[in-house]
Length: 146
Image 1 (cartoon, one colour):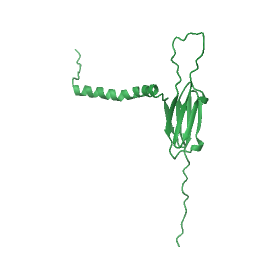
Image 2 (cartoon, helix red, strand yellow; image 1 turned 90 degrees about the horizontal axis):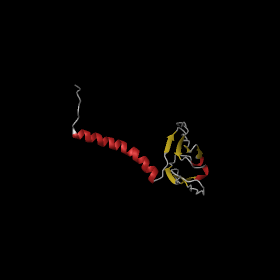
Image 3 (tube, one colour; image 1 turned 180 degrees about the vertical axis):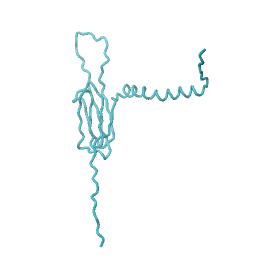
Image 4 (cartoon, one colour; image 1 turned 90 degrees about the vertical axis):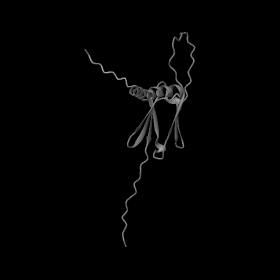
């Protein structure tokens, strides 16, 4: 005979379900909600010693489709791609590819050297490098006592 331990404590089972719901729910739904409702492509932001890197996943676009602007301290990344309607003789059975326009904005602080921001688009990822300003250390000066 096998002994099976059963936990009938209602409060613990509800607590476990709530923890599971709130730990898993935001990560799965937030991604779908962000991409479907707001059309936000996913972004990675990496801090290096000398710069911040922003990687924005936007496959299917071309370099010319992107508009990257710095307005004051707001970095705007947007794109507008209109779907081309082709008059073909082939019948489309299913169409899931779509290229929606989007706009993402990031606040840039005074630590960033705005004049040296560079962007490149390769393999479906828009990469921006935001170099940090060099912090000038105050020169030490010996003061003579008279």
